[in-house]
Amino acid sequence: MELEVGIDVALGAENERRQAVQALAARPSVILDPLTFWIAGAYGILEHLDATFGPLGITASGIEMLTRCRDDRLRYVKTAMGTLGTNDAGDALVLDQSSDERKAASLALAEHILMWATTRSVIVPALPKTDFPPTLRAIGAHMDAAMLDTLAAADGSGRFLLCEDRRFRMLAKDSVQQTGAWLQAAMIAAKNAGQMPTDAYYDSTIKMALAGHHFITLDAGAFMYLARQTAWNPEGRFRHLSRLIGSPNVELRSLSILGFTFLKELWSANLASNTKKGLSQVFLDEIMNQRPGESDSILRVFREHGMPPTKEPDGRRSWKRKAFTDFLDENVRGRRQAAHS
Image (cartoon, rainbow, N blue to C red; front, side, top):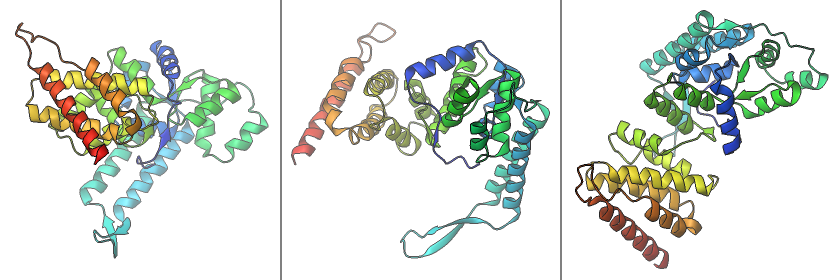
């Protein structure tokens, strides 16, 4: 159950997200499959889900899977395991071993998640309303028993299914008409209900996006939060997150709204000019380099809608608008010169 894996959590459609958040706004009782339970624990979400939806449901076989995961971590700590790779020159194999601190943290996380499952959750019987059809059981034969048990428990108990794997949610919907949603939709509901602080929401959302949870919804606030958390450093995690939203797979309208809102907030902030330019340059580079055919239209939208306010809070005329437009104009000129060189 490593976290550095791609997971398609949703289709990426706005309607799907809105329907999921609306369904969870009623704060129904929920049940989690063991993989989703693990992910929620790894990103510090369990407490907020519990406060929003009440004690979380899980099956006995789900707890058994989490126990096996904890035992795997225990063996990992006790053995000299590592990752085989190449050296910096690329001409020799090397074994990259985790530090004792990292191993201890890994085991502590597994213990924490298992503790939550065994002491603070509700064990839901894996009893469906009716017997599963043969086709579903045939598909279930290729899964861990805990996954099919989760589906049976959700069906029999009427609990709302929280599952990060979109394909499994689709199976639940098609086979037993079981409604489900992914973790971020539940986090949005928790935040809207006042049970998850905004900073905690952004922190978990960003970690999930960077870890490969596909179709995570991001907004300008997430970028401002990350910039503050990284001391306004445009490299590292900020560049990585900018690269994700610059992907051609991201819908252009959503990208445009996020982009000009973020730039407006950034250039309205009381920060050094070089700080704003550094973050903006990385943000634009990671978008434009992936969407060269749309760069002019994107920059035009950013220039039109990303303007800082005309006046400061105290009524003085703001110099930030001109600084922003000068930066964008210089960026456009530089890109056109590079294109013709």
